[in-house]
Image 1: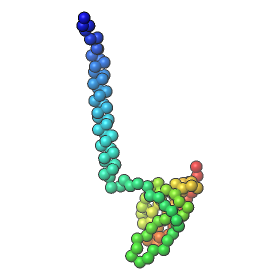
Image 2: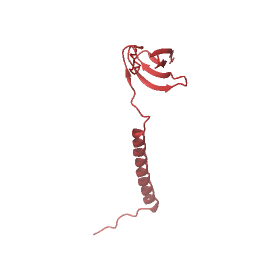
Image 3: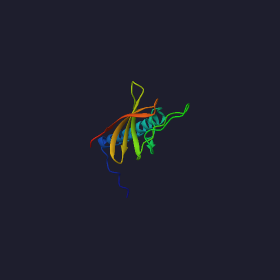
Length: 114
């Protein structure tokens, strides 16, 4: 004896098809965002900093920003005057350092209170 398959409502079939389409579109969008961020020229991994805050720069050598006590550079931004503001997440907490690459000197430091 063959029993006929149970009847499936059209609403349930439509819901399953719509959810399948949404899953495919969401996956394609997520892959697109990942590829776009990976190919973007502004996307960089955070730099790790160690050693001393200011180093002397020899003629023709590029200045280097190095941080005493360790820490992780979270964000950086170039200011209109040519200096660079750097947000650092370190063992002592977060702080913002204003660094002048021309003189390789730290101009100011701001501690961010929790």
